[in-house]
Image (cartoon, rainbow, N blue to C red; front, side):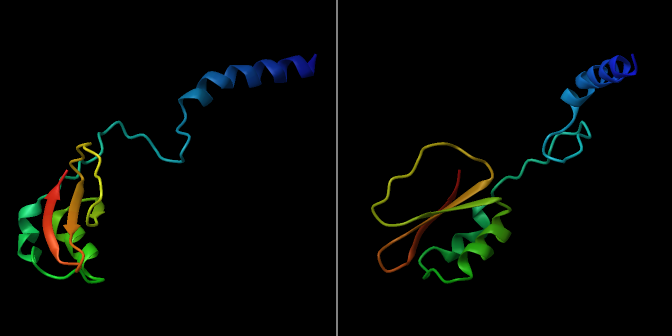
Length: 101
């Protein structure tokens, strides 16, 4: 009969397990801070050549979480993301546009 009690206790814990976070995070109930991109802060880079430091500089200055590079003659998805900055450049690696979205 001891085996039956253990099984009942185990089954009783299943509903609690369904409420647990699966990614190891703790749910505080607060909404995550939304990151927004502000491209005005980096417009001075338009017309300049892309360097190794360009990506990190643009991310830091715009407050964006994600960076998308736009090489010449490439297609871009039209999805809007407020946490992304886009940098398009030409064949000579000269920045033509920096925008958010």
